[in-house]
Image 1 (cartoon, one colour):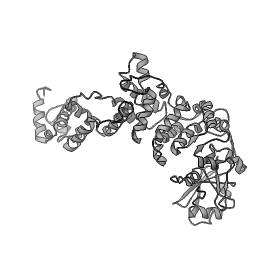
Image 2 (cartoon, helix red, strand yellow; image 1 turned 60 degrees about the horizontal axis):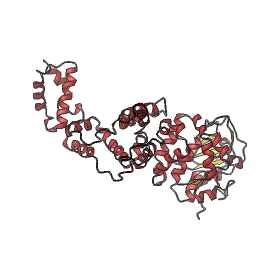
Image 3 (spheres, one colour; image 1 turned 180 degrees about the vertical axis):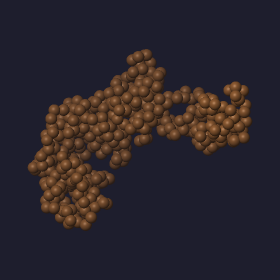
Image 4 (tube, one colour; image 1 turned 90 degrees about the vertical axis):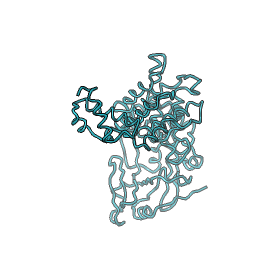
Length: 451
């Protein structure tokens, strides 16, 4: 059983120069002891950073305040950086808004450990002496791969964001959640309503990419499942919670609407997992209104704009737009009967989005539970043909421009209409995209447009 912690040389110099003991705390200890990929190193000690006494003792070292209210500072030489926090105690008011009302810096190391969320992150390592300080048996939990709060209701009741952190860290690390901590999280779940949309969004993004953190297989799926088991979706994305228990046609779906969506996250690539989570978000609304889900893609796309936009989790507009488009288009040509020329136009119109759309469609198919193996999508074949054929992906790729159309006598909207018609013809048959051929086509359109 490993019990040593690797100390970078600069950190050793900082500890030797400081006027008080310097401790490593948090994920770096856990990862070191379990031979997991190393994380950033957080350090702490009993003194405020202004009183550490290391100024001028180490060449090139700077101390940059980060949050004076919490006493945090970045200690860096421009290459290595360590966030330092003095021991502190905190008190929270009503609610779980992730913001302490009072912060004091006269805390003991025991009091500092008590404010930390989980015991696996409450182990301190004295850099100079090489000794552990472990007031809540966190080392046992690290070696047992268990997430536990020393005082679950106290810890989770104070700060609602810890509820999402519990699901996220458990999924990233593969740790199990201790029973009392799990039950306390369910009991305190309404505290999450006090957390800002931005903080929820940040944790959700980390959960959706949890498998990329330490390489735990399907960690992202376990993360979204834990949000379900802990009854947290209601306070993150209520509409996701609304899918729970909605039955689907057993000929095409093994799971209910929510489990199908979570399974889609399991099979999705990281870049389209948010779309995978929300791709069927319109089904409950459609079924309630119409008794069927035929229009769920279009309805869901509009819902996504609200859920992820400024009224909801405040994602950047670029993310909102992409996810909304993916949701809107994920049912296109589901029957596979769209004519080839029409499909080529569709692919060219959405060219940059097609690789991600195919990934979403394939994840959706695998997540039905009735067909684990999904054959290559016909979009991919035609998409590659378009790339290889040199077809004009946009009107700007035509061998002539709007000025040349105008010179032929076309005016106003006629110009854009003619350009679109020429572009469509060239997507279907790229060999037409030459200046001479397109000028001939323009001449033949004069009668149509009465030019």
